[in-house]
Image (cartoon, rainbow, N blue to C red):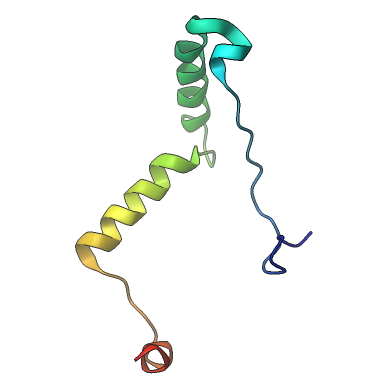
Length: 74
């Protein structure tokens, strides 16, 4: 399956739920426990924390680019 732009195949499934609709005002603590249980499993992750950590590391240390790509950009 390709992305809408015709690029790389889709690699993620994103499910967006409004906890207030599903379980009322008490749903959020349950979802937080579920996310913690998922993150505790080997090779499983919740996308947000990983992306944030990578962005912070790139901002602090920069990123390495191959010389060929760097010369094309410049």
